[in-house]
Image 1 (cartoon, rainbow, N blue to C red):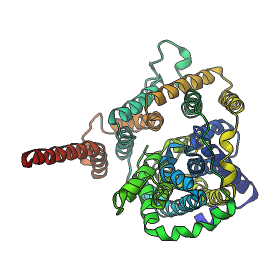
Image 2: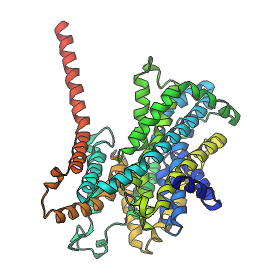
Image 3: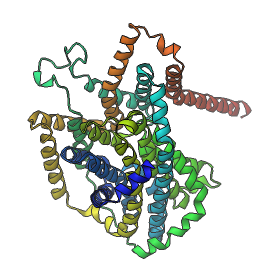
Length: 504
């Protein structure tokens, strides 16, 4: 009943208009290479502090969904994905477009995005409340500290192909979160004698710096010539939608993979797209043809990356752990309005809990309509002169960050972390582990200290309480699994090489 009421409330004039605006803006920014949904959400974050909390979450979720969905348009028509989440789509989508079937590629991609989003919404609607109520009944400070520790451990080890890069990024975020006064003793930490650092770095300024300014600086430093654009007509895109029925099994499988990947903290749409794509490729009868214009590759990639959005919202609203960088921004907006995501959200703020679920459904449907109707026009957005776009975004970022506290210190923090964001991209450090580590470290410190006070400094309850122990064991097992599998694969490869040499 609560969810149906939330859906009805969302269809009121103001929420619907904000949802339309959020999805439209997200799609446009998602279609522009280098300016994805994280950039526009970070830029918009300071503005939401002066808005109603419900309208703020509606706007940001619309941008979130629209940004992930819109990234494929320029990937198919220009060969340049709007964000890393659409890279796998570009391989087959652009190859298909060059053969004169751009409309078919767009129709399949947009339709797969819709189905992936709907399946992940169904999972979000069905499991979020049970998870939240279970956590409320069974989670104490020990379980919560173990869960947050698991989130920190997982994002450091599963944020890309390189273990060291993910670990380094996560640790940097954790270190930056420790700047300021100690939670208990109020003794300054890592302030180097500067009193302005006593309050620490505001998450909003760090977010804008890492996601918006860092992206812009990197995009400016990596300028490239615009590619040849492929023409396509709107009615041809609509006509290609029915072709999706041929790929129903691939669609459902890729969507469920995307939901699973989204639930894991710090993974995001990029990895969801990659895993879905390679699962489809590896079980296909002709895997070598992927990348040459296979429809299966487009469907798997787009269903997978869009399904991660709903999956990532599950741990955020149920347990207070953001599933991706975009969820960090959404979580920051809720925290500013004194709404704490987590197990208590469904009891203390049911309007926000069910409102997020309802908003995600409406945004998914709106994204489909917009993309099907405006895909042709969106492919030309990349032509916006950078001389106009970049200064405008810098001005908005500075004005929005200054409005937080009317302090230039926050602006300098934003600029400083913008440089950090640029350096991270140049050194291939992923930004999601940094930001999630930055957000989760204070929460972990709070829960861990509370557990230590409860047990008089003993760590034994973490081993004696079944749920806390299970969470720790699962987190550790998940963290070391990639390294173990890698060693096993290398060992089997070495044995195969040795056998060849012996028989040769």
